[in-house]
Length: 467
Ligand SMILES: Cc1cc2nc3c(=O)[nH]c(=O)nc-3n(C[C@H](O)[C@H](O)[C@H](O)COP(=O)(O)OP(=O)(O)OC[C@H]3O[C@@H](n4cnc5c(N)ncnc54)[C@H](O)[C@@H]3O)c2cc1C
Image 1 (cartoon, rainbow, N blue to C red):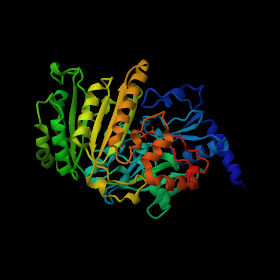
Image 2 (spheres, rainbow, N blue to C red):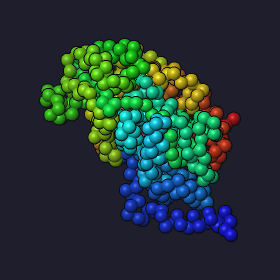
Image 3 (cartoon, protein in one colour):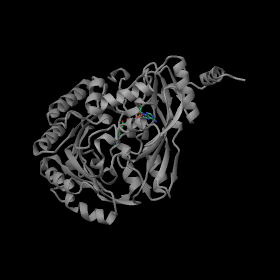
Image 4 (cartoon, rainbow, N blue to C red):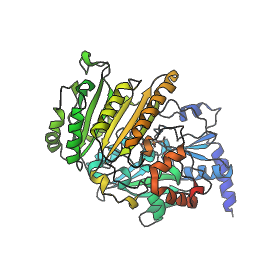
């Protein structure tokens, strides 16, 4: 008879042959993440294709006293998927989505991308709120909240999470939901990747599409902030059906635009109506006539196409990036003017910044229900700086930090969105600011599930902060 130790030794021995090590050709490709600034070297990478692989990886790391990092979509802008000297679990071989169209639920493997979820669920006329880019990972986006087009009617991604199968720091597999390990289930909904490896997520689904109304008039920044003020008032009235943002950017040298506009700063008033496409088309019409436009990409289109619309702007591993955010109680004229002024002075033409609306279903979740906490903020301001060359790192990052710092006086109780949190700064302070009153409870749960903090490559909740 084999003892547990023997079995573990067998797993560990087997695993050694499957690890990607720094001298192997596939190692470098596996450690590429979305932000080209990230160049960290894990001690080893384990490509996972099953729950058992994850368990074996966690146990192997435990035996070697190595911390564990988790890579799903690799979109984390701070590069948390990769830990220097850690064992990296690469979940990209775990992207299966299983839909129960009758129960309106989907089980989604921990390495899936939102495009995988959208394709599988739309085959049944259903969807669950994800992000705006189809190549973002379900794992990272969900665990820190998850903000997408459908938030108006269906809330954040975490508001649709029904259950999760989690591999803990001990290598055990447990199912958590509202009644099983409810403390862990609460922590997963906003507390990030601190508490274990989610092997499978179960989401609630809602009827959507296949066609939805996508609104996207583009106004040159020279028209001023008037249209944004109208937008603010309009989406406030329709917060329960319109997921929307005003996105500042630079008009590219593309035949889609009149050459006269090339290189000019602009903003897109983008919105998705979470309901009947024809109804949505009528509703958003006023947003398309708020001033002279540089272009208008509005139209009815398939939900999956809307979800892929911006993918080409965000290729993996190509650009250097630094993103930050503030949650806002209200959006005043002064803030709008400051946002527009920031957009005019951002040193990189590739950068984007946005005002996002909230309210609707997002605001209906009680503060104590999820680790994400209070929903009494109405807006978000995000600064998504993107540039090409390493020599511009300090210039663009410095500008972004300064703009974020100046805007901080407007922030809602100092809160920010942990998926747009920045990098290299005092991560502990940012995490505390974002999680606010919930931080101490999260630290107690962390101490129970990961006392040695082996899952530390994230917006880290430290187990020793529990008192
Ligand atoms: C181009 C782009 C567009 C984006 N758009 C949006 C958007 O519309 N809405 C929004 O809310 N956010 C958006 N984000 C932010 C995004 O949510 C975060 O960057 C998120 O961390 C990405 O998730 P990922 O799985 O791809 O990340 P990864 O880099 O793979 O993982 C990041 C961290 O998440 C945790 N994690 C991931 N998977 C698991 C798992 N299965 N179990 C446990 N922990 C896990 C780990 O801590 C890991 O270190 C965007 C980011 C990018 C780069």
